[in-house]
Amino acid sequence: MGTHDREAPGDDFAALFTTGTHGTGQYRCASCGYGITLHAPLPNCPMCKGETWEQAAWTPFARSLELASARGRG
Image (cartoon, rainbow, N blue to C red; front, side, top):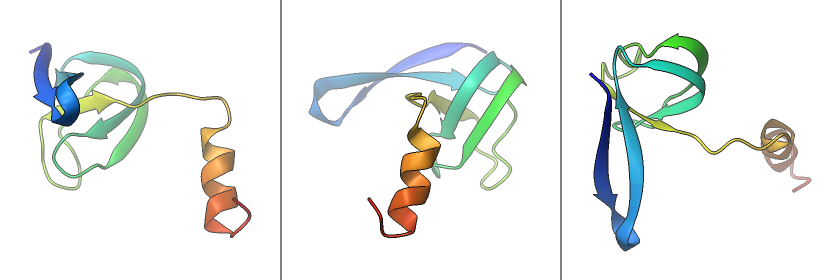
């Protein structure tokens, strides 16, 4: 259990974390994109049972921007 690196499109690398690795912050399932926020060991994805997570980029206003876009203000 731990971190794995994989090559992503465009020669960018994304750090991937496996189930059981302690995580703090926001993560997205590498298989289906389901998002979680936690301060605990990473679980299996509740949607697809995936075992690999990518840490999501955090910004202080990300949620507000998502809500504004959904309401047609973005």
